[in-house]
Image (cartoon, rainbow, N blue to C red; front, side, top):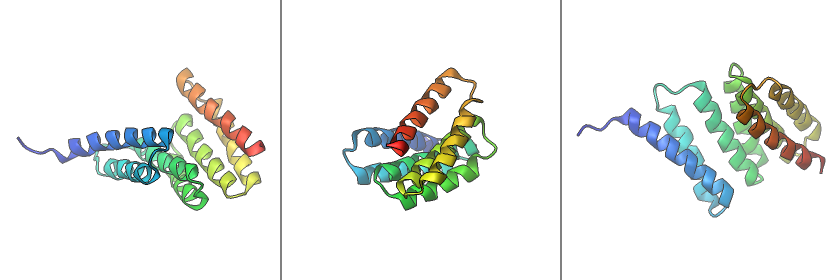
Length: 150
């Protein structure tokens, strides 16, 4: 049986993404959470057919993990990467890139810049055609708005 590296990377990318998400939800082990989200991002970088969509999702997840840990600088660093990767992606992904930046800037104490990115994300939300995607992004934006205003 021959080992297929590309398939292994794709498999591990998905598994570590899901593990990272579970750890983000449970907050049971923050170091493992960071390991998982970075591992997912690393594995996606080694999947030849991976697109900017997968790269955007990976850095977004890293940014969210750092935001959960109140690590504003690293959350912002990942959000900057997410924005750069997402510029040509559909509104859902670009909206989440702005959501990540708003969240990171809010953590860092720059409320005006955070609200500007939140507004950009809300404008992109209007362009999201898929109802499920619109609902998911909308819920996150409303939660972030409450956090920034509270």
